[in-house]
Image (cartoon, rainbow, N blue to C red; front, top):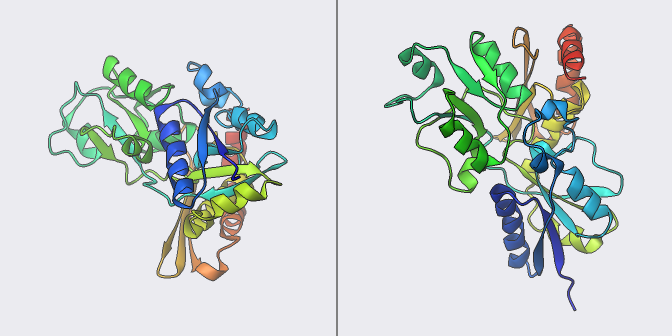
Length: 316
């Protein structure tokens, strides 16, 4: 008799969508599965800014504990939320093909954005003090680097809650991951893609993990592992880990496969947005395994350690 794979998921609409997608992929390859709902610390505490919560694993820890205690067989995560070092006994079993990696600026509907295609245009049209909401220190740092006179407010909660808070607020708008809104058909018409904002490492990708000794689940998930996404997200996370190692830091990275090459760009921004260091590297795909580590070390060798130290001090 075939094993029924227990899929651990958070209870938010987006998390359930992701887990359901994994359930569908398993079914396509002849595996039975069921969803098991687990609450995370990130879902329970919706007021404390993420960077004050010891954010590493804040959305994944409860699922990891359930996995190690054999309450579930696999866990499904938004990959950008997963610490770069997995807990002992847990391994990556699949990375789904990546969706959009971009960030969106969702405008408060009280503001008109007719024929506006960029945030610069939007702010040119509306001459007012601007307040932008986000709980991400990465987004905050990049935003202040570009718009140093703006005010940033904390915004927590699942996608639905955050969208509602924007509409009920006096904020100009808030920043969201495009993939999260698009997956559950909640991307508002009054949203602008932030082409200038580099994403969090692994943004837009979904990771499936299981116990390292569970060969049944490892084999099952290997059927839908996307090799290109797995390589690109590994490079991005290596860049993050080599610089600092935490997903609550203002470090951004994007690796893309183009014509058998990997094009990588990354940056690190001081929390106040005043200092920024960028790097771009292109290598053959066959030689890209350690590209993230190489790019991070190149950045550090350019005497950018002062920014790293500033970030460490700000996020302690």
